[in-house]
Length: 195
Image 1 (cartoon, helix red, strand yellow):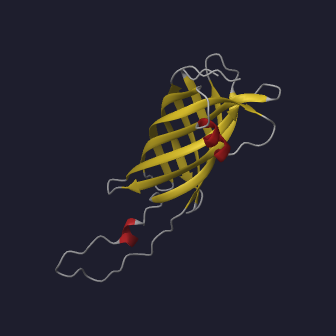
Image 2: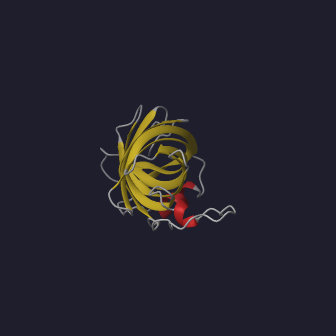
Image 3: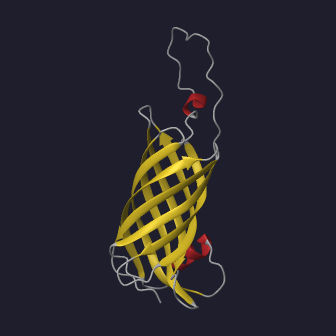
């Protein structure tokens, strides 16, 4: 696989958010002294807090027949008074070649992104920028896990490559604790040839 100019299309990212909507703020009048920030009021945004999820991805690139894979991720979002949402996200996964007979070649990856979104109620459009690592690997026929990908990336070998990425997408809250999203990102880095 060639990472230079590769486009990554992430579809069906499910995030199980670990926060709940706060109860309505009390209606008692404010005392004459300043009130400290109320944690319950801060939690009222459905986009605030830590989340964990999984993703299904497809990627294409110069000299590649395409890869389809997936992984897991963990992130944290913080919404500000102007409805801007700033977040950080880290994830890892495996992406085997889509049109190759076994054993499947592909690459393991780990990535970290900064995410800037805008709260539109249940919708949140966003842009991302990030860095990552990718390493050629062979898929032996058993299911790979996020842990396997991380172990392979930091295991012995010298063919780990770095890349940068820019992307955009939209998340939609199906419920207060379940989100689905679609994102597209372009990656740039040294070439990575899958086995």
